[in-house]
Image 1 (cartoon, rainbow, N blue to C red):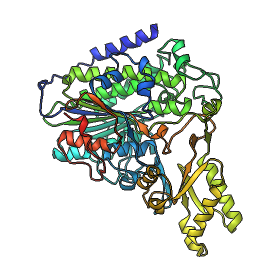
Image 2 (image 1 turned 180 degrees about the vertical axis):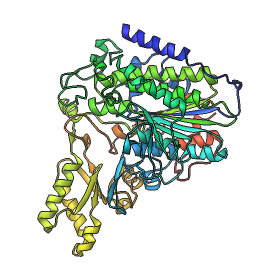
Image 3 (image 1 turned 90 degrees about the vertical axis):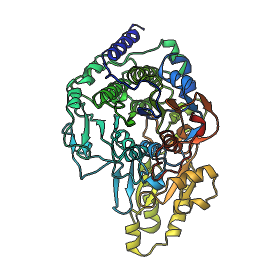
Image 4 (image 1 turned 30 degrees about the horizontal axis):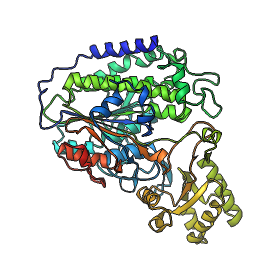
Length: 549
């Protein structure tokens, strides 16, 4: 408890020393001065209510819910439910079939190689010697974002910046026309960018990096925010063989992080301290770039990546994940306090959502007699190629399996000239349907006619882009995930991966909640209506009219 009070004092001191610039436009206006888009990576919708008792009355979550508007049944409308697709859908109002971001990685059928969602070898990284970590841009996104449309609407006078621990969490939301995007480099502990945006980091960002805030945060260690009994009430036991051990096989919460000072800048990503780091960067960005201080609406995108790293390692029922959300509640309050002090209450607009949710660890489910299992893409590819070699005496007929999406090796198949592709697909499907984890398999080109529930069918169709998607989609049984031997993952159609929070707050937003079904694709459409600008070029979402005053 003493540590929690100390941390609170640090946040209070940071806020007091932030020294926001004077804003002459504190009165009510016809538009917000600033929009802040917040994505919490891997946040399940039920965390809003399941953890409600641990959130503070003046904390971030209860403030957003109590004073803002909550859309309680918001869903991801496509497959796979992964990070890059989520950020793209939020900010484009589109789906992978249109925006082209079909995964964090995909096998490009035209180039015949695996592509990372934001990779761009035509640019160079700046801010460190990170090499490929800096060779990133939004070039692979095929449509505009709501942030692009804001820039277009003001003849590029509006400023847009994106920040995240992950490159894809910073780059994609900020859009093609962004002034800048900054992401974290685990080798140097710096926030970096690429020559897509600028030739060198601005002086204020260089100064931010030179402070080596990561080392200072490591010095705080990862201590528990709550009493032991609270973790015992909400969580699984603290030490389980099915959880990963990123801090050593014997380590348990609380974690000693001081040992990583100046040595390992990657460890912070799997701690809630990374959220503190990003919030400090958000405030520095607002202050140094003078966002919201001009005549136009400015936009800052913030993606908190730490909950995803923590979730993958420890799962939704862990002490670590509960503690992460207790601390994130404080971090969000810190950010909202700064916004109130700088721009005036209700003079800015915030939305908070997630790029996807997340499943329970399979072994945790099994322990409680609930179905669950693991089925790794690498094992599926090896198994399928073995089966096809035995049947057809031909190796490597499968090019890739990603997120249970099967890519046939079309150049090889075409060159041999002896395969009936329809029969080949049938053989694969018949083989897979005998596997215990499989519910069904869909031929993606014919998904619209598949005899599967309409909701799943629509998600498969929405996720299918011929140049960047596979040929067959495996639909696994509930609780089955593509993952290694420990931890958890996400990516499937089920509500545990697809049901996300959506909160609106501030200028132009009503107070209330909504129970009807809404979708991730509706966010940009709603923002476009709020700001009186055009929807993104690939937007298929609808305005959530109940949200708007």
